[in-house]
Image (cartoon, rainbow, N blue to C red):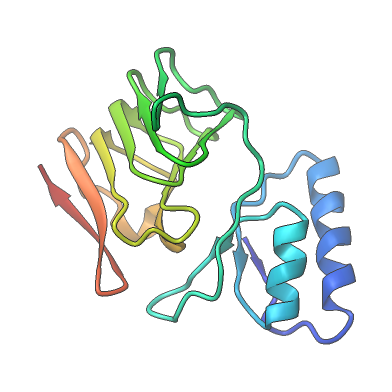
Length: 179
């Protein structure tokens, strides 16, 4: 994750350069902590997802990379999502009928459904839909995010492991509850 809160006027150029530098070395950027509007726009233009920290007010959300397009409002993936893969359901829900491996990333403008074990990253409501939810049968994720509000594994470790859960926003707080 990249924190752009301390960057000044040179920030937009630094963001694009840093993103290219990190990607060229095989590092995955999971998001940018929001800052000034010019920095938020530079991060969006660099193709980086924006993340809201804690209970701060979201500025804007945009993820432009799309590997596949949802059909009929939902994108259904039948095979496991492997490490290093990113699947994005633009404009709809994502349904994974298998598992999501560590290092994999699933994103949707709507809900994310995983009918297996979630070990990677899941982001629902990436364009700001605070009503979006993540559903999975076994939660062992690296990162969870709904409408830019996120938690990393250390914040929810052992919650939902081995049981079906849902992840949703409750007054700008990410909640994890059993189904």
